[in-house]
Image (cartoon, rainbow, N blue to C red; front, side, top):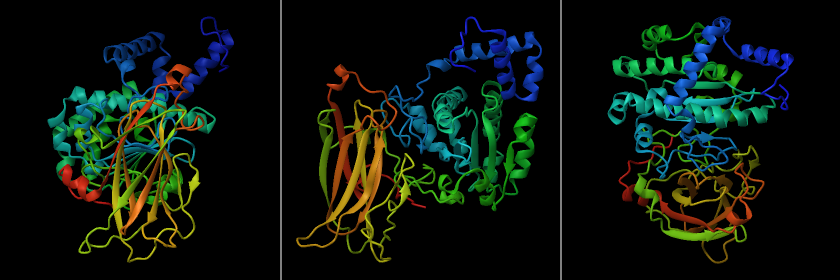
Length: 467
């Protein structure tokens, strides 16, 4: 419809166009239901009453014009920067506890038609623990927060990029690791039934297609029960695949937007946990809340003095430690804006015998519109002819929303990591520009840099399982 429509006094033609556009987005059942004006009024009033009673419009949804944290990991969008769920002051204890029981999920880029792709490692859920950390209402509140983030933040960005309205997502449920105990756990099935019922009632037509991959034969019995809870139109959009799922997924999702563990080429090596971080899998450090307070270094940045540099000495690990091949994950990959960045040609060690050290960076900011990070590695030794290695090209993060944890891979030999933080330029990110008064307020940047060994030891973590 024309953006200049007077909503208080639309013309008959504009009313007809609005009704036609609305009906085009409704299911056949909804269209038939809404042909009865009384039933339609009841349905809309009940929906509005639910939003009011559940305080849906007051949920802390991360958007460019606020500093709320993202509710779940995200990769490849610009409205908010790439992020994992970290224990910031605005993240509730319930969110953190649920994150430990969930198998790992992520909004991961877009499909070939510009729809957001949501991936869930459903087979890794600690099903029996969910009821121990929250009530059904607490679970729903978290789920509604994710749905509202998708509706208010993800869909508008995808619509802008696609040049047309995008109001549906593509979902991939990976059942790798699922057990018969998970599929037969009655409390979990009851929670799933309630959630499906709510979604169909309050968030209809938000799913374009769902792929269930790595589905074992024992899933058939559970599916017979689950499908009875779903509307026929929803069922028609669900595709259950076994082990040979990659060709089907690649018809819908470009290889560069599909994680490598699902048959694509993306690894998101710039983020701990890669494409889809998972606490149960242990593929990234799940740090406690105390890990992000009282950080070792504190500096002030501003729009007039936007940069800060720091040199961190890399000390080789003990010779008895097992070697780790240098994978050079940041040589040639798509950045968060889709811009291809590469390290200098031939600058990274590629020998199978080369070894690496993992270094972790924690940092926060109390305000601002984002911080850009870049890291170089420079070998020690006077007269060295080795060139510096770009181990982390420029990326924008939102530490004003929640703490940021980065994982760096550096050669395991004496050298230095050269860090550069800077305030985001006005052409980076989507956060609004500060006014003159706000721009004069300093931005407090706090950070700590540790080796993997010291981080694991300090916070009593299990070894990181990089897969």
